[in-house]
Image (cartoon, rainbow, N blue to C red; front, top):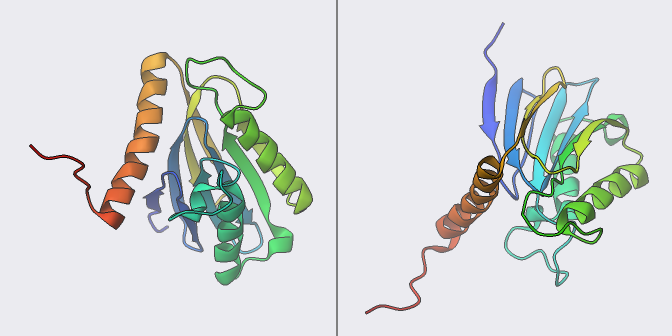
Length: 186
């Protein structure tokens, strides 16, 4: 038996493969969708921050937004030989992890509504989910078996760490893409 590869994705990450791989991510209010074609074993995961860009444009990384992230993931799976009609989904995240009042219109709830509606509209069966609540989550998706392991991270220290890591990774990617910016020098 060959050893499985491991890939970690962050906000705006989209990864799909036909090789046995464990895809990992850390979630606060973001959503990770795991899609898999069980006939081919082709699967992948995305990690998005909001359902859509606030101003309607995808900015530099459109995969940070749900609609783009879902279409990118589906497209990658199809290019590898997966069939859209056979896709199955498992989705995670949407945790209300900040110490502010929870709202039906807050980011976590918007993300949860979006992913449920997207899957329903696209007729992609939702096999499993762990959405909402107050916990951050560490998600591991095994593309070979389709199994997902989720570790809920409790406590404010853990949650703060998750939110910081989500946004640090995104900031680091932006710096690598555009370079560091110095606003003022002495």
